[in-house]
Figure (tube, rainbow, N blue to C red):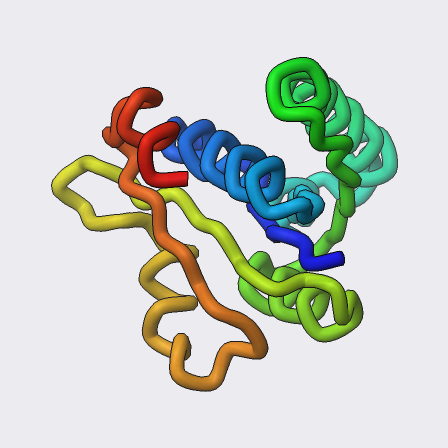
Length: 151
């Protein structure tokens, strides 16, 4: 089964990427893998409480995942899986793609502010010619209705 890999983070554009991945998976008989990466700087400066901070980050990720997973199951009939990694986001995302041979498309949401589409879109689009799978960038301000019409 072909899976869509989508990144769960704290950005607003993440929502459209989740919607797109779930709708495409539902319409094509595919699956969804949701990856969330805990960057090292999130707990690096607090060595004494690093384990507590990691656990809190994982709890926060799992809570957000459950919200998206419920919507995907209830509205799209897709049961997503969650992968949590620790490290540099781009490296970890690429590692997930390389280790899961069923991943066929990486889906990212593009930011809409003046600073650009976001660090993941910027970094991964620079190397898109050598990515192990196609990259789909979903505009962060695209309406739900438009997303439905193109998926």
